[in-house]
Amino acid sequence: MNHNISRRDFNKLLVSGVAGSALGIFGMAKPAFAAQTRIVVIGGGFGGASAAKYLRKLDPSLSVTLIEPKATFYTCPFSNWVLGGMKTMEDIGQTYALLRSKYGVNVIADTATGIDSVKSTVTLKSGKVINYDRLVVSPGIDFKYGAIEGYSESVANSSMPHAYEAGPQTILLQKQLLAMKDGGRVLICPPGNPFRCPPGPYERASLIAHYLKEKKPKSRILILDAKDKFSKQGLFKKGWDKLYPGMIEWRSSATGGKITKVDAASKSVTTDFGVEKGDVINFIPPQQAGKIAFDAGLTDASGWCPVNPITFESTIHPGIHVIGDAVIAGAMPKSGFAASSQGKVVAASIIRLCQGKVPAPPSLVNTCYSLIGPGYGVSVAGVYKLTSAGIVEIPGSGGLTPMDADDDHLNEEAMFARGWYNNIVQDIWG
Amino acid sequence: MQVTIRSLLTACLVFSVLLIAGTDASAAAKKVQKKKTAEVCVVDPRGEILALSCASCHGTDGKSVGIIPSFYGKSPEYLEAALKDFKSGTRYSTVMIRHAKGYTDEEIRLIAEYFGTVWQNNK
Image 1 (cartoon, rainbow over the protein chains, first blue to last red):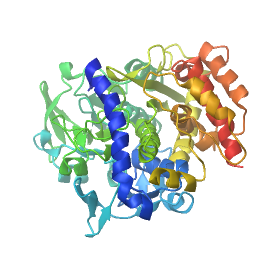
Image 2 (image 1 turned 120 degrees about the vertical axis):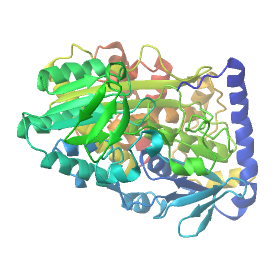
Image 3 (image 1 turned 180 degrees about the vertical axis):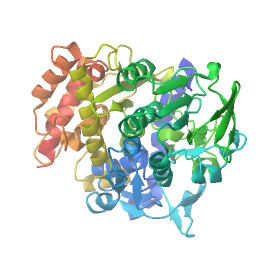
Image 4 (image 1 turned 30 degrees about the horizontal axis):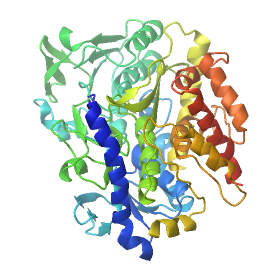
């Protein structure tokens, strides 16, 4: 996933940053005398909503339009808490009222169906066409439903929810867990890298275990993983041993975790080592950039979007910036926090470009809290900068909750996880 | 030039400091900041881009709504000292030490300057 660039390319990037600012001036030349500079943002998730809010906050002279079909956006962060019975869907629903009223973002409830990078227009499902001077695309992920035999979108919607976009499938998975008998078996099947929220499936296993321990203590969870290692592995395993001894088994790809086929009718999955049955099967498929990014030609052969790491401007289509899970961002994980951090960098960069100035070098951050139990939290932090090797983590910074952290520390991190959620959703949507 | 006209319409003038990755323009930034007046707020673009991520945990402009400490209204001096104490480990933290170690002392000064003045501009 590391997007390596040579020193020569790095120098070119810096020059293109300057060229980009020239483009900014020329791009603005026509409308600027007559009207506001028009920035359009596609996607109202962590990345897009952050970009829209901060564009208006940092430069109220801009016209900012946000295109998002959902009236309520359910956040993936904390959706595992819903599965664990600690939060409701209502708790994790965010709306766009304050972006409209407090920040003056023009929020359009519609779906972007096409981008014309030559005419600088976005076409909406309703048929409406919107002009932009600069475009930000924050499309999130799409699922590769055809990647595994027996799996499809209808299987995901009806019997094997991935629940990796918070919403109806989160509710379906929760209903399945509630309906499961004591002594039942839950299969969780995480995909290979790269995918959204690397610790997500393991926090999910933890909080489902929390629910089962309280209500259905004879039940078991089997994680069949397409990978041989996973995010915060040592911390999760230590927490599982402490809070849920014997309840969660993890099998790596090499030891029979890799799934080759699923069968919704018999509620089973096939691995290299045989068939595993589950009363509840949470199969999380491999992923790629969101559909609009493909339709607009913003993706490369990897299925993700290459960008200039200073401005997050597409290296394929100038004038279009791509952020969030869909983007190739070096060492940064695909997380809501990372998307928001990129949204702010893109907002500051676009403002500089529109002013005919050189954008400041980016500074990017990630913090991901995971809850292993209600009073047991762990985190991973990262501070990133741009070097000739792309976006890299700053040596000596970041990292995980210490393995020897005491109970007070873990409890404090669990409290900070809640505090983090309250603030990040306020910082983005409020 | 259209850029200038638009800038004048902006509530908060953002002064340009030509920054290219790796170039230290802090001397120039300091010079610009000294010209600060009541009518014009000056934001160092490098400080701004370093500081904005902090708001994800601490709230917009450092105004926290939950358990995580708020630092809205604190002085640049207070914030600089706090960040340096987190970085050195002198001050206890769970995650702040891991963040603070990602910044040079100069970057910490810029972050402190940003949050230490942004609330004054909101007045």
